[in-house]
Image: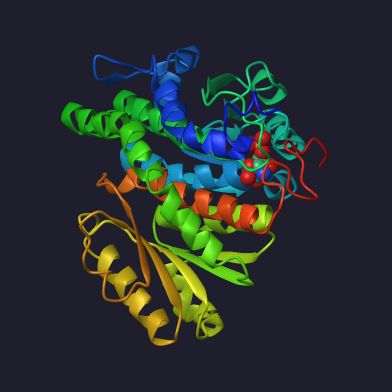
Length: 372
Ligand code: AGP
């Protein structure tokens, strides 16, 4: 009903707007006096957390993209190898699991059958399992050794938005907790990451202020037949997520690529007028990344692509080559996904609306997929 939507035109619009709260509520109680401590991990004990030799993340769809983002952070902070796999692929390939393996499942609903079966299987093989879940008491957390809940609040729209940013937040808290226990980051390094995380809700609010502009862009592009998304590093899963949102909401063919992969094939798709969203890494981040993505933009622009860049405030290098620039506030590179995803969600939602489609309940999809 209209009341449940709290004045918004759709549940999705409401849930997109709730993202600052989804992050803030997921952080709440887990940073005490500037120190990350996820109480749910106490059941494991610090010795068990120090004994982990590798982490396998299992999830489907948007939740799997949250896992891909977190892989970069957990490996960098805690120096543990992390692999991310789709639950249905993991379950049926005879994966190598030993007592040094920690399985981390991610599921908004906690009822996704593919992920549930993968968790059960992993535990039968002797792995310990942690569930990152948004639904208290759901089946997957009950079937796991511990649960780290996201506190995004109920997500009604089929397209996942606020649960995604809450999942990244919870996984980052988990990664920082591990780094503290394992001693892989110094106190000052930990404090710097904590400050970055705590600043995210306000920065998401700043990105949301550009919703109208992104909406206009979507309306201009409402007869587009195909959209490509490029990103690198943590921007790569965001490109995948932007493409998924557009497929499910606007029924437009969309594909996300790792920008470095362009010349290995996908650049052949570029023809005059082809819209391409590019998630541009911060010029302040790892030295090599920013210029490489800028040169990718030049390459596709030279072939006629219509480039929509999502770039950090003040990044002037993209200006000569981009048709549109959507700005995100400055953040440490690992935290950019929490900001860059927002315009992509809004773009897909607005394009769906421009086409007169049902934003909250796209065709053929269910909110939770309870069959394998
Ligand atoms: C995202 O917009 C999707 N509708 C879908 O990919 C979803 O993220 C996936 O089905 C996993 O659901 P879960 O988080 O409830 O397990």
